[in-house]
Image 1: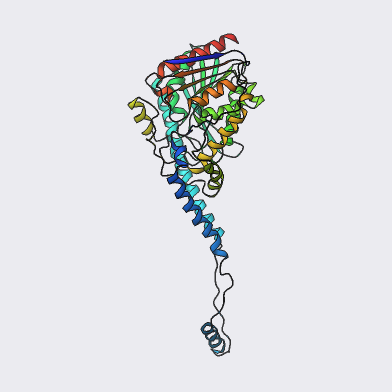
Image 2: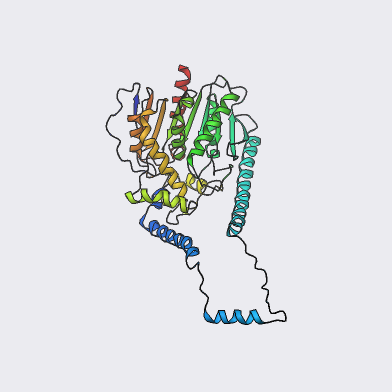
Length: 420
């Protein structure tokens, strides 16, 4: 059963100071980063790292023992010429060794990216062949960011018999990819919406170590660039965004840019990662330090199946058996970036003015439905709606009630298109 609230004016926005919201933005893995067990492991690693930094500077001044001096004297008077010439010593700079290791790592990452991209492309082409263009025409494209990263994107276009009335850009959640929303995209096609999906950095067919996010600002910037590309290809059509979980946080931060907001007709968010707070204040202090020293360190305390995200067993099997879905332990830098973006959102919710619909299951143990309620109450949008579903978990579109939720979203989009 869904609880629905609708707001058409900003007069009801709460003026109370922001409350502390306890959520996680990474399928239960964020919480594991800041557990006591993980903290002990990280402290040990930091201690080892500090020792490695200090050791090269200890004992730099080498004292020569008396036996060594005597040996040197004997060498000095030995030989026919009375002199001894030592052999040349070749020293390899530490930086050169480190660079070789980095190069080897980069090659391994490139190979892994190539395999993921090939699979993503193969799925698009296979789906397009199987469908035959009767329901949707599925295609893919690549674009290069200002950083030089290649981002994988795909599109679903309605058949010629369906008039295109609007655009929807999909941003997936952490550890997944845009292809998981293909069924949803095809239903949007049937209602006259052309759909685009972007695999943000480190995900799906895009560049980057799998599920490693050096900065979520990269994803925000790429989202803005992708929007420009979509609008250029489809002039005159209203554009909407759909964002799930961390993808929802990326969408929200992008919408805080007035230039982006001016080009977007509305936003739909499912289980958005609006607020994340560690279990103890000390972790918030350590997080930036640890993420700087050991950005790619994986927290083994995280359990990919420890937190339920759907009540549909088949949906869970499909998710965790998908090679494009990352199922390893979360990396420290990624967790810190989620803390950082959600902290920013918590301080700027009142600046949000774009029309939006937020949907959340009140049994979600991954992201807090109260954070979505806080978003609804504090946003300055004149057109804002929230739906809370009793007993539903995190992956709303993959719950047994997923079809009903998709219909709710499509109806919301249809209403906004009709008003334009």
